[in-house]
Image (cartoon, rainbow, N blue to C red; front, side):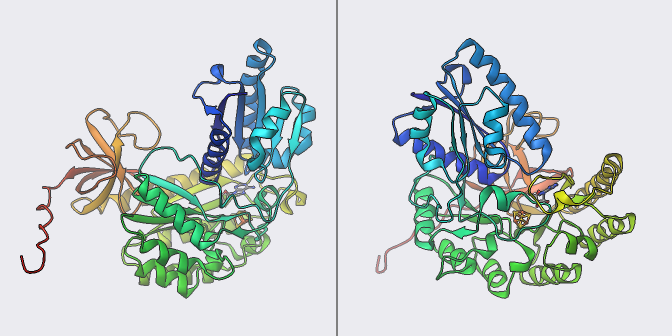
Length: 455
Ligand code: 5AD
Ligand code: SF4
């Protein structure tokens, strides 16, 4: 067992978990390969948040089933939330699988892979103490390091499978995390993104999320700090003051709303009302001028009436999010809402989703249009690519660079030789709802040479 192909689905937490797995595998003498054809084992790190996510993985498993028919000793594994969610059922149903490993089993991955060569293995115990805090991840290269600061979730929103797949909320010790930030900076990363299901409820027993932001802000060589996703109910004054007061914390917050109907929010067990959410937004915007705000919305939750939906659409016009991730409700086994009868037919969910997409598209476009003529600071990531995906330049590709502005908007501009990892001032000259088109402004004068006292 030497070469492992690891493919990641779902959220950034899964991407970070895959980096932890990659570190574990490499320390055990295994190597990662980019091609499943070259691998002794293939592992899919999976997501269970919506049914669609699971279906994509099942489709991909079909590819590996074909590969396994040609090479019967290929080990096929499923890791992550779907592994935890489906557990033994996966092993029974999909004959192709040799290994099922949940989010708390990655420390033992090399051993599990070896055992799987002898027969199917399932490791799906949740461990309320496992944080992987001592395991160095093998980070993909880039300018942005994703750092998991908290695992699991205790909120139990009624639609959400995460508390069941990732278990109870636990935070990593602040000192370990600051060590990870320093290591990331030493490895060339300029930005860190702190990850947690309700990241602003971070508490390691001594320090809270505000302490973590302030400690990271003091790390030399780090340019930017972001975090995702905070929960509105945990957005207290200390956290807001730290976001506002730390120079490196970007003026950008992703604050999931889910619905603007108090009835739906109650049925989702979100623990806030629209008035309380509005108040959090007002306090954030007052503390952080020019804050970019984005959100998550679910349409078609059981019981959502046309009037409930209209409240969400109305509030989104009022608050004007910079961007929004919009989802159709997907019933998930094990959750409380799973037992509720669905009341919104699939076509109606689709209609509501389309209406919000169109509305948000117009709002995002108008917000970005107003940036034309302004300067933004871009953390350059590299050459822009054509077509879809991050950094895609609309209509152009070659000869352009891309990066994110302080507001986490993708900016493309003509390649002026700026290296990845550098901060570049760019004037916005065009905009779409998802991308800003810019021109590098004349380079600032070189840093003054520091003269020694007395020189
Ligand atoms: N159906 C649809 N969307 C969901 N989300 C979480 N669970 C579900 C579900 N069962 C969405 C929420 C969350 C985001 C990560 O995914 O909006 O904030
Ligand atoms: Fe799921 Fe709610 Fe926890 Fe987010 S806060 S992970 S939506 S249960």
